Length: 171
Image 1: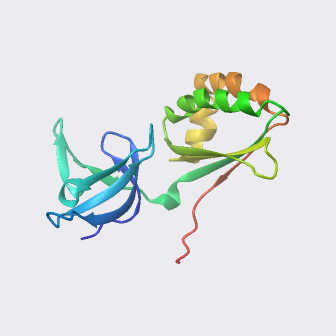
Image 2: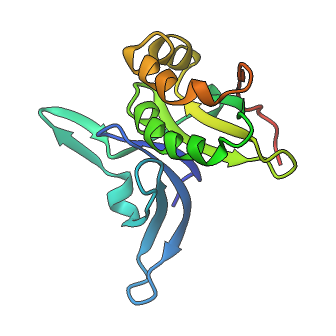
C-alpha cells in the first residue's frame, strides 16, 4: 500500500495534506488520514481504496485525489510591519482579507504568524500552484484591490515579499 504523505488535489479542485495511513481498530481496514487546506481545515479519514480510486464524472476519468509535486509549488513569504497600536485592527481586517486570497485561482493554503520579538510584525505564508498565480493572477486582479483596501493602511512600510520553492534534499 502506497500513499505518499504530502499535498493532494481533489478532483473537484480543493487541496488536502495527507498526514498518514492508519488502521481501523475494528475492521483492520487501511484508512488515509488527511487535512483540508481550506475553510476550517478539518481532519478527515477515508478508506485507502476509496482515496486511491479512479472515478468518472461527465464521461471523464479522474483520480479522486492526485498527488502534487511539491517542488513545483511556490511559497510566498510576506513580512508585514504594522503601524504601532494597530495590530488588533489589522488582525480583524485580515480575517476578511483571507477570504479574498483563498478564493483566487492557484491558491493552495496560507498561514499568518505574529512575531514574538516584534509584536507589530507578521509573517504571511501563501502556497501557490505557480509564481504567476500570485504575481499576475492575484496582483493584477480586482480582488487584489479589495485586499489592498482592507490591509495596506495598516502597513508602516512596504511589505517585503519573496517567493520560494522546495529543494530536493533527502532527510
